[in-house]
Length: 445
Image 1 (tube, rainbow, N blue to C red):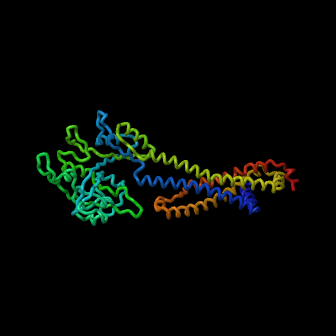
Image 2: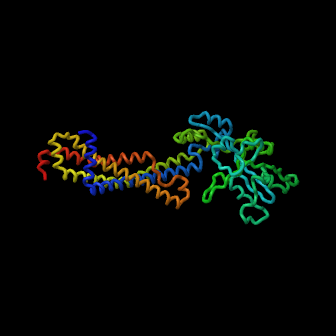
Image 3: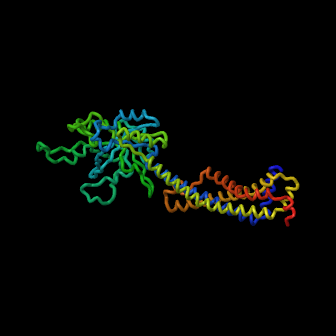
């Protein structure tokens, strides 16, 4: 018997008993939809979680700091260009960016505000994905310029006022902003020094603004909003001029209290080629005596937890498909009892036993296939509804891709799984049909 003949006979036999077939297919539909929706919820939650982690910073980046306590070490661990070259020579390291942090005081009229300065290389600003509201990012000007985060104005206040009324009416892009780098001298000015002389106020520098960050929408926040960015090389040159022969705030000093000739970096940002290599490289940097941390260990732990959640959700859905498999077995067994005489005639006419088995297996596979297709359609409908409800309840879910996510591999796997469940459920009834005695089957009424 040809394959097409088996296909035509199996599909025709199913629709001879429409009600029973529809009810059996309905069980498969519910089972497949349950598994797909449950697994999609786990995948959607995992994807949303990863998107949230990535918004906090790169998952393949290691932050290197000086050791917290290096008093017991004979060699002082500093972050300098020599260390950058050493890290760049390591395997799986793509790039290393230095960061220099310092503080300053900005003044405009009667207002003043605390600035958290971060000096970074020009190339690194391109990787930060900062949304520019006006102007441009640092590093494109010949002299030192500042790029203000969208929340910096919150730090401005009037020392003589009551601090009420919200942020001042200052246009950071156009208004002249004076910056005081020597904050100790500023707050100590007016008081007498060791010789009884009044300490003069420090010099103020007019620093132009190169750009301002775009304000995010409601219920959103910017991780860069409170910082003021600038080019690290220009910042280092300016600090060397301002604090000539003096210790720069935030920089170490010698045992005699004198400044080092070199400015050391506050942090190193190490980019790794793959997340799989982050933990090993982080351990190597820690073994070198530096304080290194990343999100990789935390993310791996969270991914394991999400894997357990997906397995539990998939197991809950699998119960429904298991019940559907019992329904398929019952349908096929009833079909054999009702078609016993037909099976006997087929055997007497010389039909191959494997063809008889294939006939019933294809009928069971058809039930699984039809139920799988309809179940997938139902799953997509439910997924859209779930995502809309979640988006209305939480705006972040709308931007992160939703709480339910059905990838292509899940569609194909669930369809194959539904067909396989149907064929496995129909295997024992097919074997029983194959083993029926021809004479006994013909005599059966």
